[in-house]
Length: 114
Image 1 (cartoon, rainbow, N blue to C red):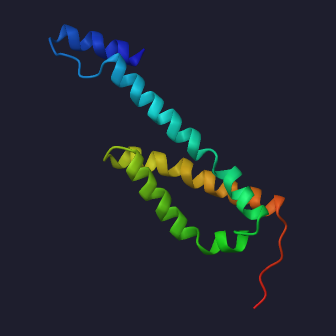
Image 2 (image 1 turned 135 degrees about the horizontal axis):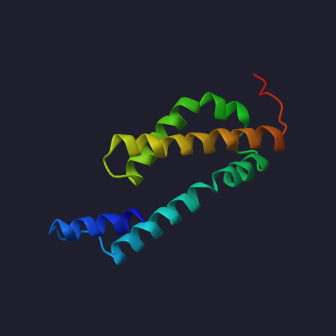
């Protein structure tokens, strides 16, 4: 509905629209595919925890690096707009925290001994 309004407004102002249906559809499919992959992170983390490759202690230890990686990944996915970048980083961080929650309760592991 917003795109329809913007297209009508651009026609009344004698501005040629830059976006077309094909470009819109390609962008929509790209975003759906990207978030479809990203929402598999909890399942991936659970599988890695079941095989003993990660545990909650290592995830907590590397949390700040993972947050930075989420910010970099959101920067790669999104155009160079800081607002959209932050809006994409927040769901990635929430997915990581949810993944850590799942790993904590599905794979009850002992703290590493030193």
